[in-house]
Image (cartoon, rainbow, N blue to C red; front, side, top):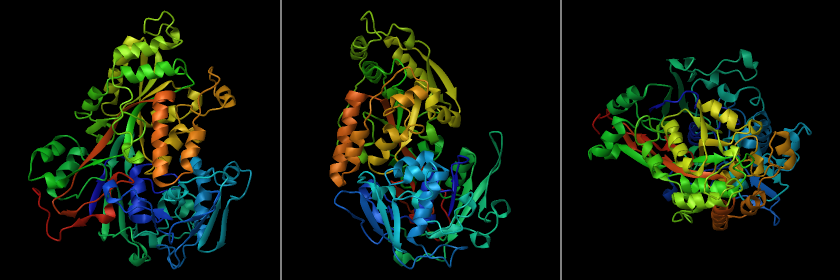
Length: 579
């Protein structure tokens, strides 16, 4: 099976460092097993239902929710070059310890584990709250209850790492436990120093000069001889071989998918003529798959920067920005992030799938300039009561804008919508990576980000509200400053001395289970949209994917919002370019 991915650098094979959906799907479908995982299907096919993977069943937990016990399957082994090594509970501890190398993205999810922060900070040489009474039992002690703890053990960052495979960059020494491994992994000497150890033949990095692709890279996955399908009820592992091209030209990739030289794009198909053609031709409809991505684009406000410290200003922003034209923009060149070309208006903070649709009929701020001006009149920044901000803090507000697709055009439209409120944005258009480097640094005191995109980390509210709005995400994904202490605000150079915190509300939801937790997240979402108002939600995108004529079975993994490569199946005959 041949699959290209067009964005350079979006495949990272270090599970403690990788924080992009393509890597997460490769780990889930193919390379790594975790205590719990998903079946690689859509939401309506129970694709977001957490299921035992390495674990033998549901976890056991104490009545106070502070002690969890996980039991591992026995008889599992790693792929070559660790094929003689059994998977044991201590290997999961080793993975969690390795989070220390890259704590920004995953660290906040595991800080409730007793002693985890002390280990991250170098105050302890082990994580006190992790015990392995035997090879197939992991006991986790928490400082505070976390009802979604089992979900957090579905992150590839918790996948077991055998002794001898935890040093340096894991990209070239990934100890696979899933149905596939990187071709040539068996030739690697894990005892060799990092600078002397060769990469497997199946991993070829792309050559890039400046921003120009000189030579595409490739990733080839082959069967893992240590994998036993009878122990894995989640992955059918249909293809025998998966070849992924790293980098490429949109038009050429589309042409090759049409012709059957490639089977699909590991992401979203080029939204130009190809997707439009498949949408309009009934003979090709069966080769076009459109799915909801569980992500959201928003205008993210920093509540520690004036005038966004005033909730009336933030409400006025929500009422003033007209969303429908912004949604329509991404249907035209140069389209949206990751070539997204269709979307729906977002009316609250989290995707409906994460809250069981409980807020899908609520529109908290339908566009209304008159009501926006009324909100502005109630703010401390409208001194003459004319519905327009009339203080210097509303002039030349730095707004970071991603230089991706139509986002700069969207930012100009947003700035125009805010003009009647007296809010004047100074649009600072930046490359994607620099945008995030600045907005994730609290000391930069960035007032506003356009657009701030977010895709779910987990298929429940815990993977949304915790990293985005709780204090554990400060210094990273929480760009709103919610939950920052007075000391932190002072250290980062803010003039505002206090901001709201929702930490207690997040914790109250996080300790719940099942439907009760979904209801709690929905109530928190509604509360934040009315009382806190940290974002202006803009839209949630969908993915449109064209497959070759020889793809006989297709599955969309709702967890990563990407094709489930292990569930794809091909016809045995030659591909038909016209379906």
